Length: 85
Image (cartoon, rainbow, N blue to C red):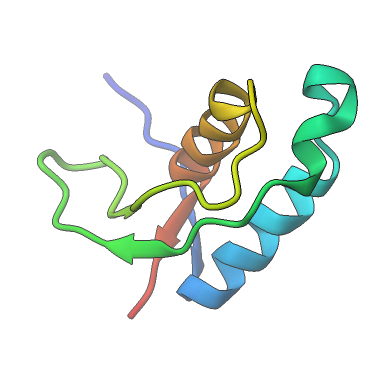
């Protein structure tokens, strides 16, 4: 039996605030990723039950070498949060 973890429900603005907080705490590349821009969450229709229902389109103001670190933060949050409309 597969156990699903309950996701936190949040509006796009709330998810963006949490993204900003986590990016500000990012230690990757000696803290250089802390100044990266904050992506905006957009709703999508999940392909499968339990899949994330939001994505980000682009990573604004991305510092060199920080793509992987910011993507990791976004992916973690997509597994924790469900976007409410």
